[in-house]
Amino acid sequence: MAKANVIFKAESPTTTGDESIATRASKGSNTANWEQSTSGKKPTHKAAGTNAKLDPTRTSTLFDEDVLTLATPEQAAVAETWVWVFAWVDGDYTSDGTLASGSGSPYPHLVIGAGGTSIKWQSSSSRTAERTVDINNTDNSSTNYTFGSDVEVLILTHASTSQVLNFYNIDGDLIAVSDEANNGLEWDIDTIGAGNSGSGVVEFFSGELLAAEFYMDVTLPTSSQLIAIGNVYKNMMN
Amino acid sequence: MLGLGLSNTIKSSASSAPKADAPAVLLYDKNTDEAFGLRFFLTHGSATQEAIVSGKTETAGKIMNGTATVTITNQTTSQGPHSAVFNIFNYNNGVSSYFLAPATSDITISGDDDYETINLTTGSGLPYEGHSLDSSSAFDEFDIRAVLDIPGFTTSDVFVTIPTPVQVPNA
Image (tube, rainbow over all chains, first blue to last red; front, side, top):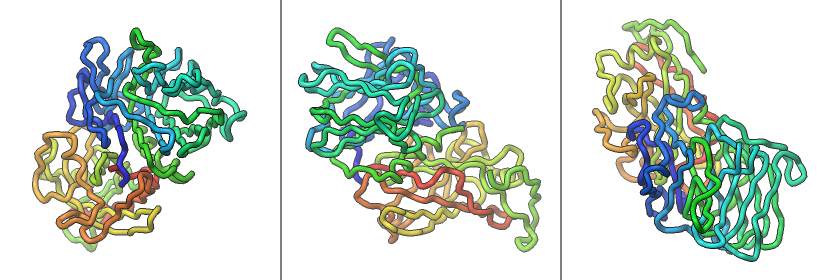
């Protein structure tokens, strides 16, 4: 199989429930660990059977003003095709919540907007400011969608050298498209669970993360393959 | 949810034995190499479950009674379908769940990877030896089906209760 560059995988049947996560190996080709040394910022491993929305064998990682940082950042280059997959449950969309970000200025990030009705992002290039695309209409897509509290998936795809970003949900439905200049500029990602401001972490993701996967330099998935990706996480529903 | 709630009884003759319950779910574990895991549930108190655990200790990694034949097709590359037989092991999380592995005796669970034992490559000694289901793609679609074969029962119906196709492990 083509190897993912970086993966955070919440599934860990041998980890004790409610254990704070100080380090967890990335499962991708980037073998650096996901780490957190500050006790108050460590996410919590949730044991099987503790979340009724998940299949009773499934474990998850609770992010509640918590953050993990990859020891070696992963770069998404302009000339590469990227596919990023995030899966979570019990998302709280009271405020903006950051799925992934970078700690280097201008602090790239991928954020679920408050209300679960939009997606925001910023690349590692200072040539673009933060951009927002609404998902709760069909202005930019074929599907009107709002993220809820059950298992959710966000798939981001970027074709090599393209300025088009496509966003898909757990059903493989296209929920947003952004076709703006410089959209596909380089991203340097090293953080999940929060954004960076230069003086600290901000815009925490609130929910139980199931996975964060970053594939670079791969072939874009077909529409049926997008459904198959979503099915991985549908399998985790109770 | 095939076969749930049936009040099967174990009989000595295979020809008159009831059909094993098909498990409630068959779960798929993604991992980052070619190995992944399959686990499934049976309803508490079902005759099939009683047969699986009869005489066995229900702790993690203990081998149970019976086998499961898992047939996998790489729908993207048209590799397969290929079938392999796996033994059934206790998953030990209090919900009567089990996982499949090619091992023939108890497995020592020392880490998460010990649950992820179904390998899609063609290497010697692997479950699908000589029948690679792997490809270079990151997002192949797989169809996964299985049947249970439990002592005292005829083989279960095919159970495919996970949404398929699914993406495969990714390394």
